[in-house]
Amino acid sequence: MGLDSRLSDSLTILIAGPTASGKSALAIAAARMLGGEIVNADSMQLYAGLPILTAAPSPAELASAPHHLFGVADATEIWSVGHWQRAAVEVLAAIAARGRPAIVVGGTGLFFRALTHGLAEIPPVPETQREISSLLYAAQGEPAFRDLLHDLDPEAEARIEVGDRQRLIRAHGVAVATGKALTAWQTDTRPVLAPGSWRGVVLEPPRQALYDRCDARFVRMVEAGGLDEVAAIAARKLNSALPALKALGYRELAAHLNGDIALKAAIAAAQMETRRYAKRQMTWFRNQTPDWDRIEALEPDAQAEAFKTLFSLQETRS
Image (cartoon, rainbow, N blue to C red; front, side):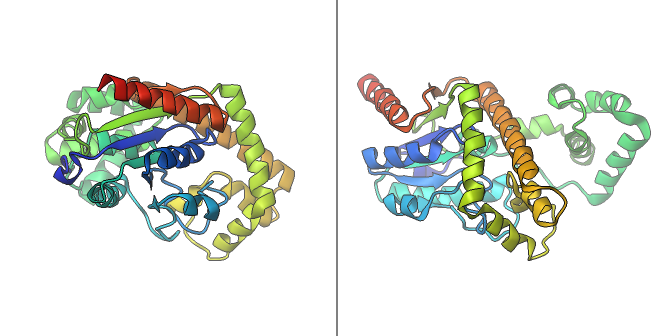
């Protein structure tokens, strides 16, 4: 999807960062300062049914400013990056039509990239080709399969991490089926947001302080009813591969409810997975958004003050 003319004159603020870094509170503060509306860019907070476990805004927070794309999908649905992008474009256009700034907030890096860089319109790969690529990988092993992929798409082969079987197979299948490297498809994109119409801010607090907050927050989630949320979803007997069931802590708490693990051990395992996820997010934003502004504070008031400073500087420069 290319640049949307309905958004070209609107101000869009992107607030990104790892889980538990304070994004939601900062987005609400920004909305109050600017009279703006908040748009969700978190892949888990799209889904209804797990607001505690996904750290979605509370009812009071939702009432404090207009919020969009929170809890809009059932757990049985699958929202791709493209699905979210299309929904976000409609929401952002409506906000722009009201003459208000939009604050897009979340921790899903690919959602932000879809807005600022666009998405490639890659043709679907036939099932037969996907099977052939998968069989080749299984038969030859990763090193030999990488040699095959290198001949077709050297950039993809170089950037895909060791052991990422799914992406290696996809890159091979796309190149063979379309006659064009996946890298070439991905670079042939246009941004949704007009250059100069948006500004990105990444929350980048000290790592250990963030980890401590992740741990404490998960305990509060359990105490606030996280187990009840998991029990309600588990009772529906949904396919475990559904994205909603990948929410941090869901698997561990479901195992506890099933009698497979003690609650204390389930909490410890979920805390560890949350810390790992936060680390991956920090790495992604550090590598993919090096030119965005940074806020290193972790306390809400300090973050809000840093945000004010950043945007007063922006106003002075413009």
